[in-house]
Length: 234
Ligand SMILES: [Zn+2]
Image (cartoon, rainbow, N blue to C red):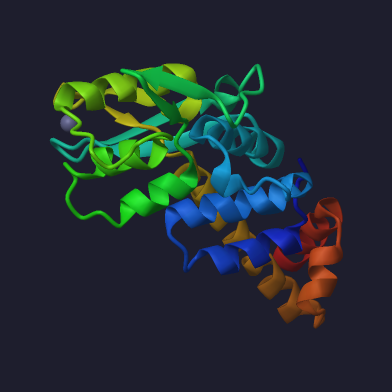
């Protein structure tokens, strides 16, 4: 894994603003884990993807994820914190892990599978499409019942526990309780967005004061840059 320079963060942010959240996650992983180029992040299990995103978040922005969420009932803004270290896998899971359910073999879902399902407009059909795309020996004659879907879903979740982390919330204003899946890419992207905009503001301030170019300003160490900024803003 590698951390990125300020100028690489700006490049990535610029490319990512136009992308779907799934593609943003893959773009970040491709930049952060270049040694894995033989095995594209799109084909990693979702647990491996999330663990890698958490590891990179920790290296780039620190181990604490600070975020907020709006109460679905009254709109109250709930701030919360979590330690992303708890989302980093203790043991490497093999990408070709298989789960057998009712005589059929399934592989773990990947970002590529999610991307195929994301285009499915019927939310009731999406889980079925996901199951079909992960079934290794389907012959097109299967009829999957609700119960089959649930069983396959439970077994795949058990085989790849970091694929989905659900967060529990309780609103202090209206006492509503709910849970929802943690979307690490969204939180990571919020950090990237804040950092990119801070960098652009710094470049603007220093370029206006000294006439330096963007690459010259981004090449300064953080300590020097903040020292110059303080002198300009004093
Ligand atoms: Zn509420």
